[in-house]
Image 1 (cartoon, rainbow, N blue to C red):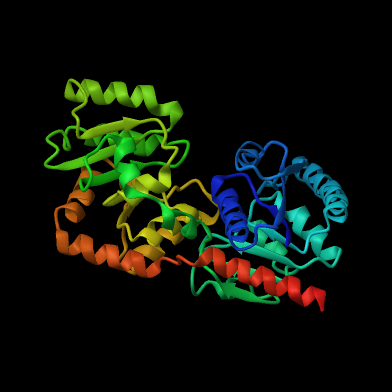
Image 2 (cartoon, helix red, strand yellow):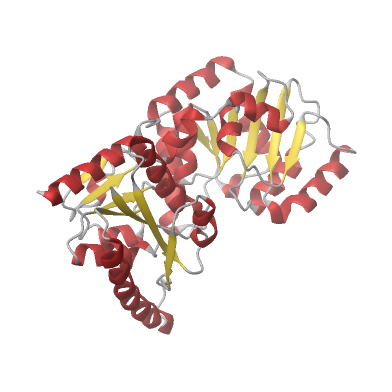
Length: 371
């Protein structure tokens, strides 16, 4: 099949698209891809690293307040549709896939105008603005959270697939995860991470929590600070403890996150949809600190979905402190029965075959078009 992928702005939109590509490659080595992203988006860096052909359009998102910038955005959208049509006519895809972010707006809309089947994937429990708009034109809407199908009342077809990123982590090797961290195999690992770029509030809590974890008690704590926060956080931890003990690991970034997740016993993190797909696929219990700075507060909705099933504990950022975080972690890590039940609940929510479900739908759409 020939597939156009589009999505961007954050890794949460990009990595599900890449996961779909990898699944299709595994099923059909003759698959051909084109990724259409934004000129300034994160996808312009990440997608070429994944060895996927990349082309770009110039597009920005709408501001939520009245602004002349929105007039410019409409003009960029129209130009983006025109540019997308030209790319689509040249590439001749069987199906176009949009995974969210404003960049996929003109791409999926252009495809629908050209009569090309389209699938959009919504990662979050509360749909984004672009996907709400596109749902009226897409052939299929795929959702990550079961029960959120009614959020797209005008869609032609809505299916529950989970998040394709869940499939990616299933082949991760936990032994490699332990080795990369320098931690003995079989150790209890608490991973504290604030997203790929880090989060100021979570890093502050890491620093405040350091004295509480100073004795280790057989647990290895891994702090992932984000590149920009690393030096200051490590320095503050050193000052607190007079050094960094061998059971506390302070890192700027983790490049092999699936492998590290595979060896993690408990994770503290934000509530981005792709991350939640990964941890539920692996059955990892979590303490979730949803970002309050996202559209429609969708991270809290994501987090509450896990909490409601017994897979996570939600700690709001306004209540976050080192002591509060350590208390939440200790309640789980110090109680084997609770941790086991949370792990089982997390695993039940995992949709490990998500990528194959999306690919199956792409094949159906392509076959229907060929009739």
